[in-house]
Length: 486
Ligand SMILES: Cc1ncc(COP(=O)(O)O)c(C=O)c1O
Image (cartoon, rainbow, N blue to C red; front, side):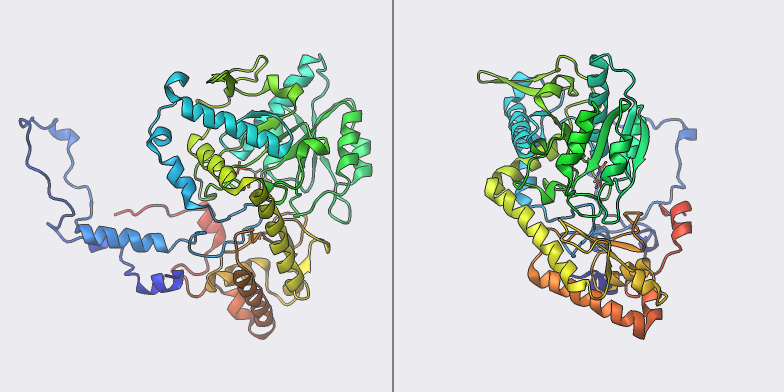
């Protein structure tokens, strides 16, 4: 069922408004324990406004409500920078196996050998895919992976007695979490400008890299969806200055099986398993951002790290570990999903993921570039950054176009990011979408561009068919209405 038809059929009354006195969704079993006196009167309330509804009413209400959400399982979701791809259901089935789903993080390793073995094998796979063999699965999000990686960089320099390295060099096109993580790790952020093509300005980098440089952080592919052509030169410049090079590999979708970050000269990276490695992403669900490092840096990894001795798997603390960055071993359910995905796809399958992600993004780019400006008119990686600058001259903004897409059952792309692109619309189709879906998206985007000329008001006031139409964005953000109040 599409969102629109679900919505049309939806009885929009809130659960409270369906309440009929005396109606109930459950029949309580008769008590088989002796009656106990109630707590003191002042602790009891009989004025709680709880809905009195039948079980069927509750099921229908929540089922209809759930269908109002855009999700990758129901709609095309071309959200740039966030890899909202289809996540095969076998991953969930594996994560639900009792031997994985019902264990407790405090159980000793001897009792959960299968789980620790899975962690060990996932470390091996991620080390192999990135070319950075030291792996800790502990970080609970991409940003926490960054933070862990930057603590490692600091610990490395401290171990050499090099206390003057306090600067993190970060390009202006970096993902927003990069400077935030660097600041949290106690580093001073210095911005590296981009050149006219959207690449790191290598001359500026050369000027900035010096004896204060602790680390250079590079999002790869860049937030413009581009591969840095001067990558080898960049890693060399930083190494010559005595710094380390960090890859933000949150979106490895474009690189899987094609190139290893370690081979490019990176010393540290993280990757978001809740994107490329197939755990549903978005909506604030659990995340996992393992950190990968060179052999030399592996002694600084956060604990725990799964190790193997003979046939026994253990969870260990590396000798110079930066310590624990959260309570337990990482988001274990996500680790199971990622391992299942890697094994199910195999080496060739993962390479095909990257190839198709890149082909799909370039297909969209090539079919829309006569109507929408491009942030950079060259081959892109897994995502293309369009600009609605041309439409803005006709008085319609990127935001309006994104809202109009919702009327066509397509989730909005990422808007106004990266900040360096005017009216940015960042589209990542992913490898899992069919040519038919891509063609439909292209057709809708072209249709909206026609509409911008012929009936701009229809675009400016979209969406028209959703249960909630155009919101006052500022009030929605500042005064969110989060719960029903009697
Ligand atoms: C390039 C990049 N780096 C880092 C992150 C941060 O990841 P998380 O949201 O899991 O902290 C993201 C998330 O969207 C990202 O796209």
